[in-house]
Image (tube, rainbow, N blue to C red):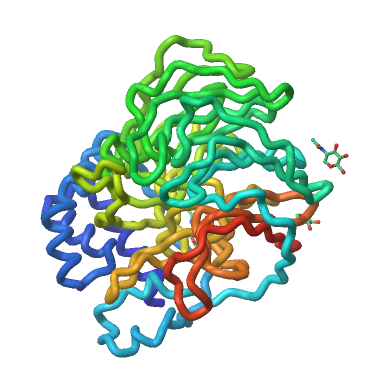
Length: 432
Ligand SMILES: *[C@@H]1O[C@H](CO)[C@@H](O)[C@H](O)[C@H]1NC(C)=O
Ligand SMILES: *[C@@H]1O[C@H](CO)[C@@H](O)[C@H](O)[C@H]1NC(C)=O
Ligand SMILES: *[C@@H]1O[C@H](CO)[C@@H](O)[C@H](O)[C@H]1NC(C)=O
């Protein structure tokens, strides 16, 4: 099984990191990128070397534990995302960009969100999905919250965010009443980040602020766990360099119980756009990427320009031991999933995302699958197809229905590159 082979190899290499030399690291990094493409190779041994070295450093420091069983429940066959693949010698391609075979799900179209939204954030509390911020277009960002009611299946309840709050790439978490909104990008295009943190009391729609993060981050993995707000990873101030730092702050009922953030065990791999989930008293960090678009040097509007990115499917877990454990990776590398997950029946369900770029034309490739991570067996399944490929979806689950809204969809069934920023809301009845 070609797909899982790469992952098994990766897991083994990760395991070896503790005793390996830099040469092994460069090879493993190139393997991640998608193997033998020469351009990638040069990049891997050159401009990204800081990434692999930084990762290795964290592996050593954290005394990481690799859980040995890597089992991925995906069908054996894979299909090309487009015809072009066939014109290229197969051994050069990792095919991680291709759609995975998946059963069809019956999707029902629901009322669209009031605005199109990309890189926004969402939090579900009971039957309400709070949807924050996001780009309307690259040159326009939202500064308000919309609410979807899963009982009436209607949108409403719009209210403003604090003026100083970030507009995209936020970290979000909730205790069921208070919503913590952490750091992120301030403004449109590829502007700088803010380290400000705000708390929304959903009972009265009032905002308060918390002590700022020690340093700002774009799209940091964020969760409430054991009475503390945990923030880790993300991209650093230049929007591209992965941060490994992990901080926490004791919080209760929307208030900080401490004046300062505590430094916690760094995450083995940094970078933005990952799912961060607390379930069964464990903290999971899933997927993501290293690198992101950056502001073009000297551009007065901070125009976004593409930089090299590596998308990955790694799954890391913290438990009471407070040591990172490596769990079986996603069926394919997947990023832009920070609010694209729900917890259902002792499993984590993830909708859409972005995967490794196309190895030949280098275009960004969207993901159209629904994944399930079984928390009992620690295995992954591909459980269905979305109505189209789409990234940064905002997902919810209510009364047996899986919902998603927002994000950026593909150009069509035959073209997995991103195009339209959407307002669509869809749902499907889940049977797990
Ligand atoms: C690993 O998988 C094998 C075969 O499926 C199983 O027998 C074994 O118990 C698993 N080990 C762990 C640690 O889960
Ligand atoms: C959500 O919709 C239900 C059904 O119409 C309604 O009873 C409830 O008050 C709504 N909740 C909010 C917060 O508007
Ligand atoms: C969750 O499990 C329960 C009990 O097995 C089952 O009745 C229910 O349909 C499951 N939910 C989904 C969404 O599959």
